[in-house]
Every structure is written in structure tokens, then in C-alpha cells.
Length: 277
Image 1: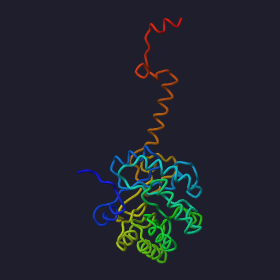
Image 2 (image 1 turned 180 degrees about the horizontal axis):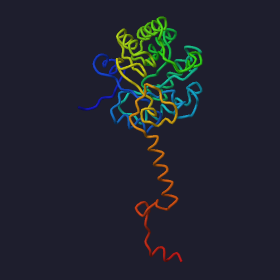
Image 3 (image 1 turned 135 degrees about the vertical axis):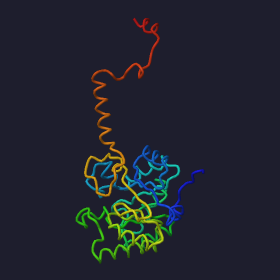
Image 4 (image 1 turned 120 degrees about the vertical axis):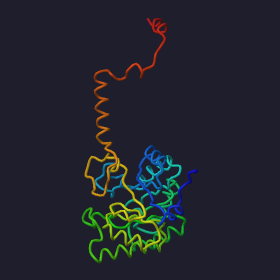
């Protein structure tokens, strides 16, 4: 069957039919590989601050950095739906600022949608965005942009009030017009209740397998992150060690002149060399 380009409508239609697959991507090559693999959605996450740019968290990531990486990912993507994160303080100051910045990610970055962290407090903003033709993915639970307010990276919704707020937030996001919602670091049974309470797909990360889809940071699932590995990450490969091993082998080959071998070099006619003297 001919593969079709994934749209927001495609993702919404998967609710109750089949799980949505999503991975982060931050550059052209990774996006191209994941797209060829058949992934549904690619997230240009502000997590690039941690895994690509070396920041301690996502807060320093700028709009210009998000645009730079979003452009690279969309150039490498043919079928998957590309979602770009709205970085910290790109949408909080005013609706005008938010719509302008979201519009840049769509118009300049060529993303198909944007993702925004927050619940009921940003529902009105999401309504304005969708009214202006900007598809939006919501994000509740552990919101990395709120890390200072939350006091660290912790599981959310563990008491009654917090759990009820997450359910209410999810419903508010659906009413505001999101076509999907990321649930991050939420107890699995609570995430299942949230997923059943709304009619748009939920995409879990540390939220159990009852969500309508899953997302992971590419560096985590490929085993390329040398730092802390969250409990919810399954490492499908250990590329960190493979890359180190490859680099060390290259170093040995260069130092012993085993590389480049004749197979990696270009020849010249001996008669030409003779005439040089």
C-alpha cells in the first residue's frame, strides 16, 4: 500500500484504532532515518537543549534555536507529521507573541503543528491558535519548562487534587482544540483514565501503555545519552558504547597507519609522477 503523508486528522483517526508512534528528532539525518522507518510523528523537542546543545534543562532554548532545528528536521521528512515545541517564554507573555512565534515555526520552520506545555491556564490561547490555523499538541503532567516551579523532575498527579487537575486539564485542552496531548510522568492507571476521558489521542512518556501512543527522546532510546536514564526509557540500542568503540578503533588505525588503506585512496599514473622530477 502506498504510504500517505500523516496529518493531524490522521493522528486523530488513530484514537481507538491503532497506537500513535512518535520520536524526537533534531537534525536532517535522524529525521530522514525515522521517517523511512515509518514513524507517525516527529517531535522537534525543546529537549534539544539537554541532548544536543548541552544545557542543564530546556529553559535556555530560544526561538531561533527551535527554528534552526525544525528547519533541519522538516527538510529530512517526507511522510511523518513534524511537531515543533514552543520554547520557554515564547508564548507566555501575550497572545500576540504566542501566535507570532507559533506562526514562525509553521511558516519558516515548515512544522505541521506546535506543542505547548500547560493545562486549563493556556486553553484560551490554544483556541486562538487553532482559530488562526495553527494545529496544536497539548502537554500535561511533568512539564520540563515548569521544572523550577515543580521542584525537579517528579511524577505528577499522585494525590487526589493533582490527579483531578490533570483530568480537568486534559478535558480543557480537548475543548480548546488540540488534536493530541502528551502525558508525561503520570501514573499509568491515571493516564488510562485521562485517555478514556477525552476523544483526542494521548501520547505517553512515562505514562504507561494505556495511552493512545508513545514518544521517546531519540538519544535515550538509542542509548546515546551518557547521563541519567529515566525509568520509563527502554534502550533499544547501546549506540553510546558503539560510537566510543568505533572512535577508538579509528584512532588506533590512524596512529598505526592502517587507515587509510589502499582501498580508501586514489591512484595516479606513474608516468605523471616520473615527469615531476
